[in-house]
Length: 532
Image (cartoon, rainbow, N blue to C red):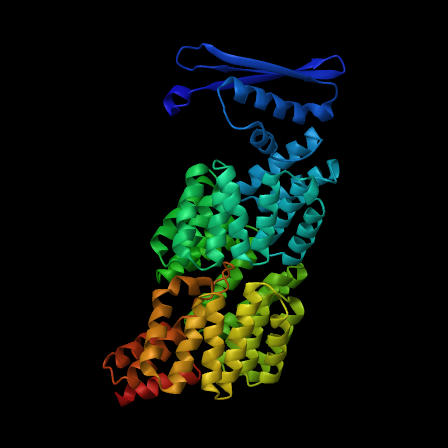
């Protein structure tokens, strides 16, 4: 195998009982000649010292094989997971393998067992945090990260980069995350965690090309890892390359047909390609997989229903999904569905139910994306006072994402009051924080209301070019294709303002997307189309 893969040295090792302690030995062999290139051994008096002894042995072997790295750097690099318990490290390693295989629920008990064996093992708490965040349990993730941070002084530099970087990702501070993971990649270029999380960091800055670049690198480093390949599928989707996203998701499913995340990514890619029948079938497979799969499928199927204008069907689906999530104590999932339910009510013209849904979503979850979406419901249902309270709540947060949403929501309030210049200024402020799809959409609406048709046309065109980001506009893999059809309506309005003959065809595209739709936009589009 070494010859086939071009590996120049093979190291084998052994651990032997030596009285009450242990002897650890290893030797390096040339795979071509079978010549022993060097050997080393070390001893420890107790099992608790085995991990440190292995690190010392590795240092000896590096020097024997000609490594000229300064001793200070070698000492810094010799620890990956700080713990005095072999059993705890074993459980942590099992959990890590399950994590990279996309088996998040199965990984949690092993991280938990590692903590039980070594309560000071900070990286195990960080692992619990990552799994909780991946499954949408943000409150649990924050709790575990806080505990991990309490043990950060016991961590090696390598562990610190991973832990702080992961925390910054969870709190949506991608620029700080990029600093941590760049340092990790620079010092440990073969560490698969570095490019995997750098990709996610660039994703949160909405730089989808860099996310795909690092995503491919992480797949190259860990070609069999489900997590990295699933992430690559999602980065491709957000970049608008739905075909590549579907291909990457299918590659994961070929290896692991029961991967809920790969099925979810495939369904999103199929929806983006306009293959709604295949997307529906994929969501049905996901629904039968597990309770989590059923929850993911519910919001996906409801999103397709709203995309087509079948708001009554969507509401019926969502009401069942919300009840199931609440029963399972999945507040984040219930909140996302409640927002979608409010949007269905709004499309039906029921502002009272819309406001009630916004209230319910906020009671379920206080995540910035939920506050932003609830604020939009308040504004569109005519209650700007409650939306303004959410602006205040978001503004006091120091992270970029809440600041982005505060500026967008303030702009939406101003626009609803006819304060066009104030709205444009708020949206431009938001875009300086993060160049978001929502920011372009709102800027387009503000320019349209201002009669600035060229600028409006440009913003809506950008929304369509960056349509991949609207697949899940809050970058949380919760589909929001239902937000795309209105872009065509407003683009047609801008084209109409420019006296462009394209307006009629754009109105037709909008109406074709929502054959079962109703509401103000549908009615107005039909009226304007008849006038052409």
